[in-house]
Length: 134
Image (cartoon, rainbow, N blue to C red; front, side, top):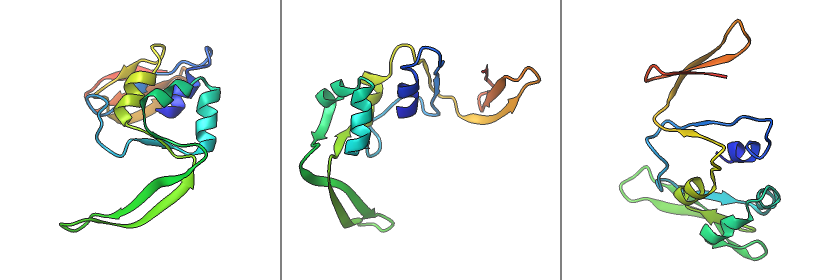
């Protein structure tokens, strides 16, 4: 998703997102950025994401990642990582707020296969039987 957003900034690159799920959701850990990645996003015009950040720190040492063991009835963290520049967002906030209108998103499209046509184009085949040609 992040790559598609970045690529869509170039008018000579056509970008469409095919998502296997029925919609973006807040399920999962969300999206975190290290300071270098954050600098790239702001250069591409993503600095407005600070408005939807669940935590933000580019210079302070902060809790940035937790390693968790969850293969038993009661899970537990076994390591917490601290670093500079951790900026976190919920996945729904980023996807709903930042995917540009020039980047169509197609939901419920799980890729089954792809092939190169004799014309040189790429044909995508999805589990629901739909096709897309690029």
